[in-house]
Image: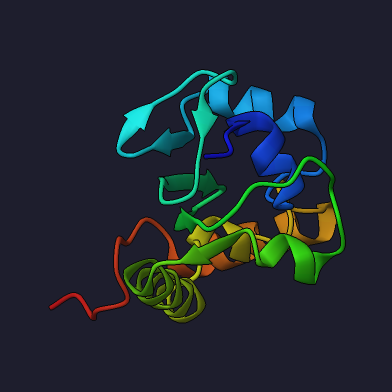
Length: 137
């Protein structure tokens, strides 16, 4: 049965652009083989389950084969098969991120400009010391 180091396999399967990036991510604990954290020298074989976290996306794939060379994308995709559960979770998370984006991303500028600051001061002057727009009775 053929075996290959996990860092080489991740590079050949095009999960990472370089082997050094793969080693770094493995060392940070973002890659698991069969549910266990691994070191870059861990060998994988056909049938192993690998969980790879890239940013906010976690992909779980089953190893179908190994390759010593990094080939074109169609060849790399033949080395693994993503589990249906992983595909479903990835699509659900993508939909949630699309519908409810991060609030901090909507902030276009940090500090107001001089003109913006004057507009804020004018608005505060109109409202005075009130906390809300309700009419005081």
